[in-house]
Amino acid sequence: MPLGPLFSEAELIIRLGEPVDAPVLAELGRRTFLETFYKVVPKQAMLTYLAAAFQKEKITSEIEQNAATYFLVFLAKTPVGYAKVRDDRPPEVLKNGNATELERIYVLQNYIGQGIGHQLYQFVENHCKNKEYAVIWLSVWQNNQLALSFYEKLGFKPRQNYTFYVSGIPYQNLILSKDLTLIA
Ligand SMILES: CC(C)(COP(=O)(O)OP(=O)(O)OC[C@H]1O[C@@H](n2cnc3c(N)ncnc32)[C@H](O)[C@@H]1OP(=O)(O)O)[C@@H](O)C(=O)NCCC(=O)NCCS
Image (cartoon, rainbow, N blue to C red; front, side, top):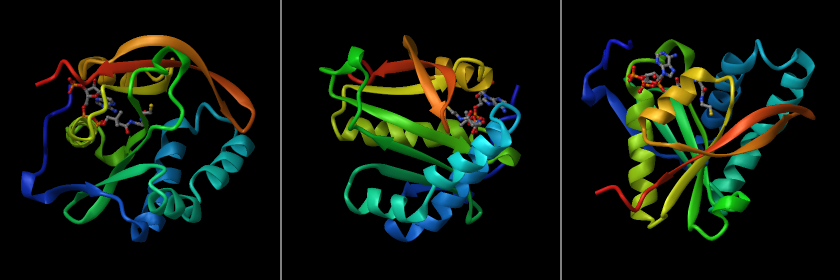
């Protein structure tokens, strides 16, 4: 069981990412993906994926073009986590559902289990509800028990299987979704 917030609310700041944040988001993206999957993804495949998926130029362009929305969480001014949503590739099962994807939600290893992810998720969910999305969905590796438990407690339900590729290596994922229209 996490001990609960070990920080004062005043120290925790969550805000939208701006183009100027791209270097920080790229670094957070690489570090958190590596921390989470270094035992799962072989080294060369990991290095290839990290180099391609978290380029600061790509992140800048995504923000400037409104192709994705990023969220940053700071603890005492230090960036400790981020999230990313996009709405351009709903899975078949949600094609007609006005759905948005939580593509990434990651907290640095040293800070997980302290309530930060929960607050970050609530911020993202409120943002998506304000944008009038009806459904939020995500894909999670089927063996990522901690994340699965996190999403289950937030009200996500399994929808379908999905194969996620890291540098060509297939990983069995699950697509989960949550109806945003039922929440006050
Ligand atoms: C999933 C993640 C964003 C949750 O953020 P967090 O700050 O750890 O979550 P919180 O502290 O707010 O909530 C913890 C809850 O999440 C679960 N949890 C997930 N990872 C946990 C961890 N390492 N330690 C303790 N609880 C964890 C627990 O079920 C816990 O539930 P509880 O509070 O009812 O006991 C974060 O653990 C993380 O970045 N994990 C690694 C990256 C990852 O797997 N991201 C999702 C990819 S799909």
